[in-house]
Image 1 (cartoon, rainbow, N blue to C red):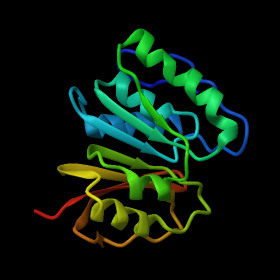
Image 2: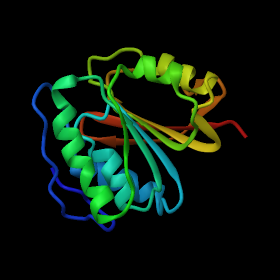
Image 3: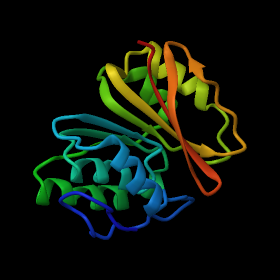
Length: 181
C-alpha cells in the first residue's frame, strides 16, 4: 500500500497481519480529492486496519488525527506505520486500540472528518453513525464518510445527519453525511 497524495505521497505503508481489506488506492485518492486541503482540520479514522487513511489525512494537511483499531495483532504494524507522520511531518497520530463501539461511547473529542471503514460483513453502520452523532463526535460543519459494500443499504438520513454525496468504487460505496442545514 502507498500514500496517494500530499507531502508523504508515494510512501509505502506496511500491511499488518490478520484480516484486512485495505482501501483501494483509487478510492482513497478520489475521496481525499473530494475533501480537498485538510490543513488545520481534525480527522478520525475508525476501523483503521493499517492506519493508511489516518496517514493519508496527515499527508494532506490534517493536524489533529486519531485512529481506532480493535485487532491487537495489528498494533505493532500500525504504530510503525503512523510513526512516519511524526518523524516526517511533525504530526503525531493518536492511536486507540479497542472496539470502535466502545471508543465512540468514551470519546470526548469532536472531529471535522470521521471515516468509518468497517469489515464488509459488519452490519451496524447506521447505528454507529447515530451513536457518533449523539455523542458529539462530529463538528457542526463536519462530514462522516462510510465505506461499505454496495449490497449494504444505508438510509439517506441518520439522526441529524443527511447523505449529501455517494461515490461508487467497484463493488464498494463511500457515503458522505453532514448535519442537515
